[in-house]
Image (spheres, rainbow, N blue to C red):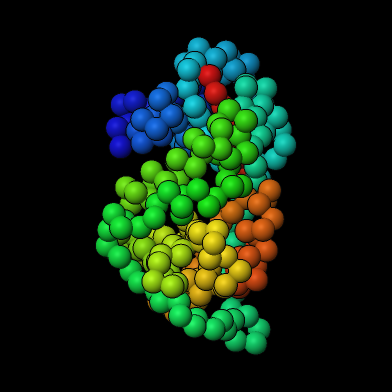
Length: 252
């Protein structure tokens, strides 16, 4: 992380700290940032709006802001050129009332590879259709697919990053990536290749993660617009809403 590339826009008692994203910059071919809300003081100041146009020209910026900030904050950012993309929901796993959900794994096996070289990354990455990048009209579906394909190709498990794959009919059918921090485990990149769907492979993967991280606080996340993913996670025990964030994009 190179903080020297960060941009800070401040005026009076307001300040916006935009953290530089090197990987995103390379992928999108333009300077990319995310608003660091922990370092920012967001207030509707006219001069901030003017500086955004000047300093963030030809940039891509993501804002994830807790919905508790209220409509005034979102309206100010929209007035600065940001626009609403989706609402992210962070879900917490709650043990089902009648015990764990059971699925017949049948011929499905779970593995934990240390490399992604042999994974069908193109098929797994293009299985997503409702991410915030797919719903942004500035990004075509092929480019959005490539983002997730590239992410998986370059992913490497670590002490805090874990990769699970499901194999069916001797082929990789799905993956889950899990990040751990202290006693929390967060699931993301839950993908099942289209031809293997409707065989409970996603649920079998999630059950394997739940078993592996027994005793952890388990979380996952998705977007409000992605009702299929929401229903899938709720069905598999992630039924408590931990937090919600409004997501906005800016293309300078």
